[in-house]
Length: 339
Ligand SMILES: Cc1cc2nc3c(=O)[nH]c(=O)nc-3n(C[C@H](O)[C@H](O)[C@H](O)COP(=O)(O)O)c2cc1C
Image 1 (cartoon, protein in one colour):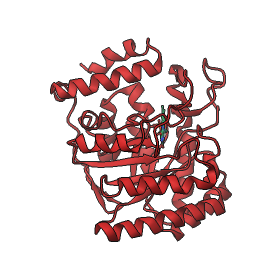
Image 2 (cartoon, rainbow, N blue to C red; image 1 turned 180 degrees about the vertical axis):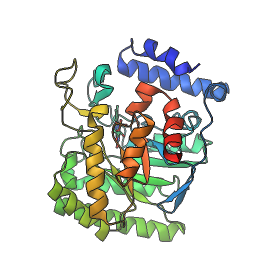
Image 3 (spheres, protein in one colour; image 1 turned 180 degrees about the horizontal axis):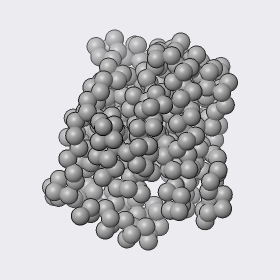
């Protein structure tokens, strides 16, 4: 019996953010009591080397579920090959007013406008310190809402300084649709300047720490062919360690007619699957094998993970799939990739 099949109908009767908070607290307690192991399937090994790191399997947890890094050890029991926590910002911030998280069950989708609600990087550091997890852990970095967009690089540099050497990699998130102007950082001159600053700091920190920590960049799915080519040129020029494709979409294709389909925010889950796969394919060509891709967006079945790898991704991640399918999806994806 899959225990998530029992929990899901109950959770889906609650408001989504309440269900989220309850689940996170429940997971932490169940882990502390040693209860999770008994219920979770063992995920087979399928090691893969990417960004100079050896991943025990290529299936990861996407950013946004554990914004503060408070359930890392519990989530590790799901068998993910890597876990990305955050987004974290330098200072704590409340995010957008509630409601800001919506389920679209008929489409196996979510719309969110959380707006980087998080307790700040110092709180994240304390949680990282407490975690026993020894696997591959990434932290997703965001700018504070009240940091002017011209000063966005300062926020990313503060976060890089504080987190350097404490985790396996960090992700510069320039693609959340819920922070005003953030996506403008994906444009030519802004992106060039941002990547220069980040790569210079990464090099200085690598010298100081005697250890290289990879920096990935996470991009939106709402890019045209020209933008993808221009961005890929900069990712290659600056030797970005990986590109995570993609974040949520502004498109409402396939959900306009559904309850909550018109909510403001980013759409994730099944309706965006093909869109993000197309973006991965286009980046795969434009990056010419020089920068590895991590694929995310609408993975709800093992075959969806295969589709992302076939499009050129080295690793995959999901978030919405965990809400609709539960932790069994990790094993399903790893087995599909091993087949
Ligand atoms: C509620 C929610 C919050 C999210 N928060 C973040 C975030 O803080 N940083 C980020 O890079 N992506 C965030 N994402 C995007 C996911 O990491 C992922 O890229 C996207 O949802 C597509 O994958 P999926 O269809 O498997 O969910 C969030 C997604 C959801 C649903």
